[in-house]
Length: 400
Ligand SMILES: Nc1nc2c(ncn2[C@@H]2O[C@H](COP(=O)(O)OP(=O)(O)OP(=O)(O)O)[C@@H](O)[C@H]2O)c(=O)[nH]1
Ligand SMILES: [Mg+2]
Image (cartoon, rainbow, N blue to C red):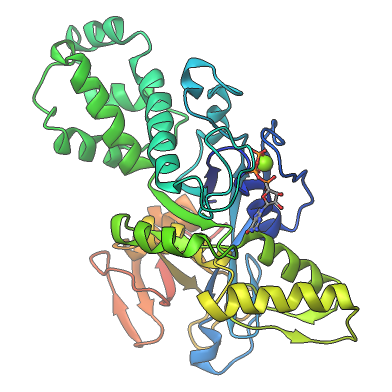
């Protein structure tokens, strides 16, 4: 399962984001260092379900379908917050970043309203420029990568250089557990122009460049510009959007309130939507809270942004698509008769055989061809899967 890590300065709303996305109750408070041990839970990315195109009703097994949308599970990890100098041991240090080793992508939650100083202590909205938080956090993440890579480097480099071993394989095993694959290493070596240099010849600067690039490639970052409900955030968000690739205004607090109200049956709300329906008589406090969300979040940004941030991490930063494998291409079912049971997240550019290996290695071993069910054509290994494809795999090795 894809793992998304939440990182950021302390007291910016990481745990609020986590709780809103997973509906797991965790400690949240307006002071630094509330979270110490990581919180792990299941969140969902959202895509228009392919059942709509076929005009059928689906029976989801590995995911959930609400209205026209398929919600596909991903793992979400919320960790303790950082302050500048964490790698030198300030605040809680940065050792807990090890809880993010398995993350495939990071959502960097910032206080876009500028209402917490560099130590995470509450200050008047607008008084801290959130851009400064982005640079120090990225530096801390880089330091963390660097410390893992540079550990015992001299010895490692000498051993690899003096042996006949492939440096790429050796780097891969040195970094195992960091959710890094061969492609990440090859790409990093190419971009840092280190591919033809012996490891022993790498300078300190080369090692730093390698660490920085590897982080960018193996754990891309999406920025959740949180506390977007506070008016002071608007000017900062405009500025950030011009400078960074993925900046999603979020109000984790609004999403948490809407999800809780929906669970309690007070409103009807589908995560990521721009509106909700009131189902019950509201008390004045509830009415005030929902009006605030409508006026300061939904009417301005079109959603609370939490779903969009999750979606951007998976479909944007990780370039994943959704594919629906079926066993019966006429009925769109698995062998138990479930219609469109599974929605699989897979990298853009993957082939039907890649899909087979995601489902089961046996299925991939005997891969013969696949059927593109929408187009009603046979496709081979060379076919590039498209988002929303429904695929039947034909293999000589039976499915276990
Ligand atoms: N206005 C506003 N406040 C928010 C939002 N999200 C979180 N908060 C508040 O920000 C404070 C910190 O929230 P947490 O979720 O505990 O922050 P954290 O980043 O997990 O903090 P630590 O675990 O202590 O590092 C709480 O008072 C939240 O209610 C938001 O979208 N808007
Ligand atoms: Mg927290």
